Image (cartoon, rainbow, N blue to C red; front, side):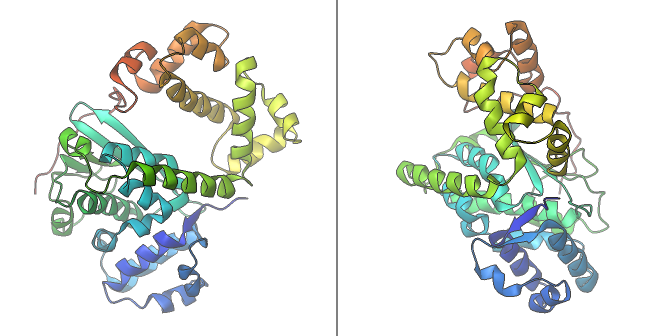
Length: 351
């Protein structure tokens, strides 16, 4: 079974966060059977479950359940591997977060990110997965603290989120959270998320550099291709992209192309956290966004390129994906993902 992994860059950020509470991370790594020296290898990766055990052990020894928030105090673009430099060279935080979503698996495979334009601003929404072990709340809280700190670092000024959502229950002591985020807090939320003001996200970044952004895109893309090359999910997605213009691909055809039985294909995809139908749906959704960014392509052409025999099926699928029609989505512009009608309103706790 393929294990989810975390980059050495992110693991180093965790180490620095734990050391702020006086923990001996070299000793912790030894206790967990991890190679501490591998932190200096930019291409090294650590099993996700090992990072989960590291957080658990750190909370147990330090007695500080909010220790994950320390990550916001040590974050720099380097903590995000090559993705951090791609963010730094982006024109705006909107563009930067779109890159973060695209390349997030380079940093850690344990999290799914989405970035949406909501009625109250922009939302960076995080879902942390475990591997064999359930994820810790410290992992999600560290990611949120890092995302906000990175925004502050890139803009050169402190940003105050509209609100911050946490899946975890409200802790006994909320003071560390109030200090870390300086924004209304929502606990027991259905997701972990940062909600930002629109103006903050769309303001030009002082570190923007289009040429460097393209260069870092290339580096990140090459790394992701190397990293994903051995994954059946990546290989199946490539096959789907080739077959879709010929009509909706069937599982047996994709399996045959990959020299696998249907049962083996489904098992391997399940081990990597997806299914054939989910992968097909995700691939269509991603391609739809790319095609709609091309003004010369008609909606009818896009529907057939995505393998829909009937354009009405494309329109129904698109509304399910984005909560609007392809035409309205194109009019609003790809740089501003549409409002997710399924995102509920929350009552926030104000610090």
